Length: 177
Length: 172
Length: 243
Image (tube, rainbow over all chains, first blue to last red):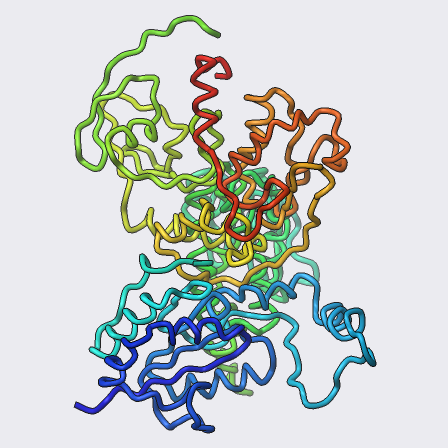
């Protein structure tokens, strides 16, 4: 049996969900007997592969770059999992939606700046008017809420998936866990 | 009572300005339903109107001619329900606002089939779970326009069916 | 109206199971006593039922509408259904509507882990909302020296209003505005800190199902422990005189 191709993607989040994924500790080794991590901030691969079986998305969709990335990932993924509250609800990144882009940028780059206050115009992707959860942009097959989702929930979900079963994680995690 | 919609519009109301075609009649006030032209011979009584998804309500009527957009009409009446909701129960307080936003999205031509499906489901939720008559009847304009003018909604979807244009000269 | 009404013992069925009840009880009372789970948010033991959250809606045979279990009195021969595909779908929708309405960010909330909205989402398997979040902007009233009111986290269950008026007798808190703009205010929409009516009893803090009303001090994320059961105790001590 060929190994399941697994990928993880990091959008607008704190990387805590990836840390929680790593918190599965030695169970990762058992998992990787059935799966290959083909793309991730944790590995070196720069291009998203042609077809991936399972992709975990951490973070909300906050910039035009995020939109492009998530569309590409969706097109090349069989089962897409929204991992953590940012991907599922918008969570902390979406708290700026109440204020709008301009005041947020002003607060971050002018009011709070200690040196040369200026709003960056190059090298940074453009912020969307509203931060949105992943499923508002592309179809999501499984939602795994939590801030971050507990390692046990991530491990359970992945071990079910590599065995070809759709996991039910509803009682292993919740918003804010 | 008992007179048909057509009699009321053409005989009592003297018909439509410039002899335009009637598209729909909205009866019973803002939370009533829209009745299409081909049902104009329906008598105005409680049961007949209810059967068409509308209500007797205030007894008022709004007649729209062929230029009207039914999505716009539904959105307009929903705006009324949003501002009239007292805010006590959840489905009416939040549901009317969300229905209004979905209708506006459809109107702007940004909605998908999935949005339309959500709107329909939400209509059922608000209708069946609201505390009082306002919430329970707030979805009527949407449900009745969806029932009789569904193609107008679908034509505005990003991924919807576009209406077939009549070929030039096809009309005899 | 304190005349003694004759209370009768009746039988009804809940989800097909015959149960006994006294005729002055509600469907919710009887369901709870018999181990049936009916989700609730605005209901709180000891407060006058309000019927606003619509989570406790049940099917009653012969009624063409769904009825709120917290406000519906039992009757002889009543046939109640507490769980069905339709009810589950409606309850999930109501939770989704609540989550989209205000700014519920569990991960940074004082009530994380003690929040009834959050645990209800878990209990009913609501793992994401299908509609866009509304992200409204509400100001936070932190003028009181002991309490903070944050309408961003409010679900308008009115428990604080009811406990303040019916149990404490102060009626400092109330709801202002209507529809989607409704919000909790103190007195005539003045700063809570200047309230001449607030007795600083903190009952509102105890009954709030979310982090909307919280106590100041060393309270950070997930540290808002509550004693919601106290109100039922107080109401019982007074022999239900608020009814």
